[in-house]
Image 1: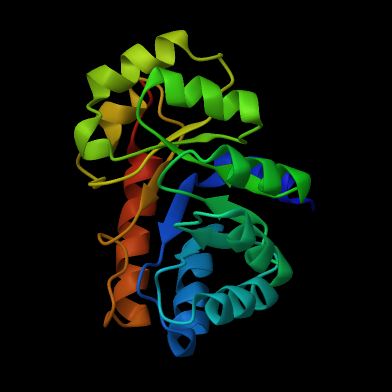
Image 2: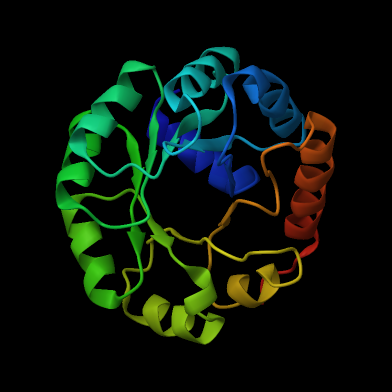
Length: 212
């Protein structure tokens, strides 16, 4: 299955991106197994984590059914290094046209971070697969509703930042396609069992939330 097909399948099943900031390579396989067992198939290791490329390579090899990649990708060189591990997902906190262009060139799924309509349309024009709406703490459901009203109908939008099971419904009601989940899912020092419990809670919240 190619990266974009994996992304589409994950969106249909459980469109939650695990953001494993601070993950260490020694923890990667246990945490990855906990996530996959809970139905999560979108996994990113931010590049400001310890030895991130080692963790990304290990996760990519161990869980081929998942779409694994990197977050906090800031340069085209970062994109190439991630691609060299076999990973297929590029996530950024910002929109950098050169980063998106390199990800597109390499056939990777690319989710740049945007906050305004101008950034969103520029990212889509550059070839972004979808949009990371970031930081969601500053983008209320009402703001997302206004953005969604002007974006192309098929645009994938994933709010990231401060997302919890209790506020997912408000964003879904205005058109969020899924979410990126960071510290509420994983923090350095958490056991795989902790991550499994958190992952199950978010998965249940998604499954139990009815789109309005």
